[in-house]
Length: 100
Image 1 (cartoon, helix red, strand yellow):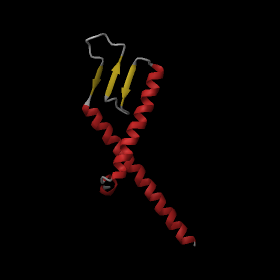
Image 2: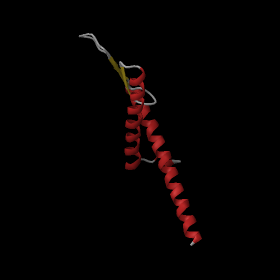
Image 3: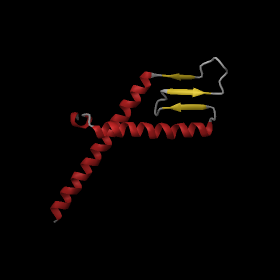
């Protein structure tokens, strides 16, 4: 288990890529259904803005804890995906070597 969650550059990059892609997809879905809400973050919205906003008021909110939880969630997902990919490629290579 320790080896699965051990930080590597590939896991970190994949976590940020997944966070970006799924945040963008979720934001697109929300904007298509609710036209004046602009969330960032998935599964937790760590930043949300809305409009139209009257002058002199704040029409956004953010939550640093949810950002950290999102990053941890996507890091664990990326670690699991890379573990499964490496495990399946190793088993494929060993099967290929035994058949030859």
